[in-house]
Length: 313
Image (cartoon, rainbow, N blue to C red; front, side, top):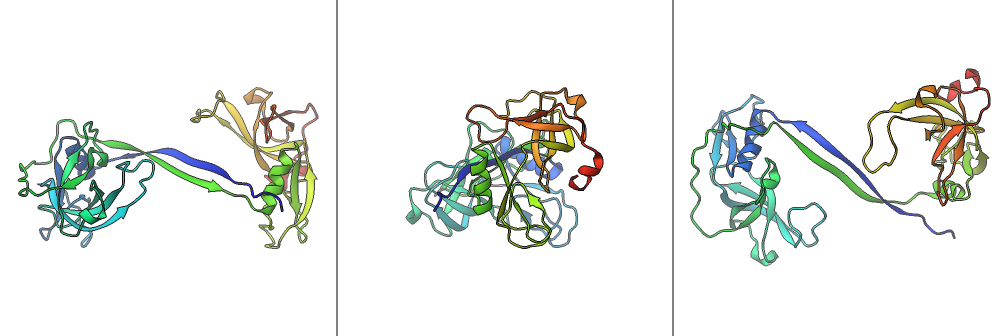
């Protein structure tokens, strides 16, 4: 039995969002070591604050300061902290109802072990040393046996309010291809492109999926295609991607390999970006030790007639 292929993959991007007057004031307050909530029409104080009443849907902007001390309402112990979590050693995830608030805030509690945590535990905010206007300005909560802190009555008005945040979104996972894609990847290591033909519609899919997406039947007949192909559509990339050592502008296109019933993605090089066109005939360029083509370059053949690839756009 062939070895099961697997590889670690990461999907990562910065997520930028603007803040309204309520969320902006809340995060600005954390920067200045002030915790703000918002008061609803029926007198409840919500922390974290929201811009619309969850019961009546009315807009609410009445900001009110609450104490940095509070009570644990529920909790769960985290034995193995992951990358990017608030603490590197085991800690508790807790919901804390701050003094003066009617709702609970989710954050981390620094405690020596699960035996030290219980519902009703009194805690207080431990502020981060460097604060920038983000939820991480609260480094964590810590057990506290003192009297409830007294809010100073901050109005929620700041001279230099936070108006936006950038949050790094990231997903780490291990990818394992199935039978069809494993055969495709192994063929690429031999500088061949192998697809699978649908027994019903007879289309050859590259990369193969193990089943025809049109007919819904299993595919198993392997068909070698290419290596040359035709550019069906393309785009010019003008923004440099992180960790990608390619100078912009460059061209990324759909390439229908000869004999394939589906176009695949590939970078197009060896030609000025403004000369790439639909119908351009291309061939793969491999680098030493590469497991897939680095890019595709023009073959010098006449352009393909539109009728030969119009169904592959």
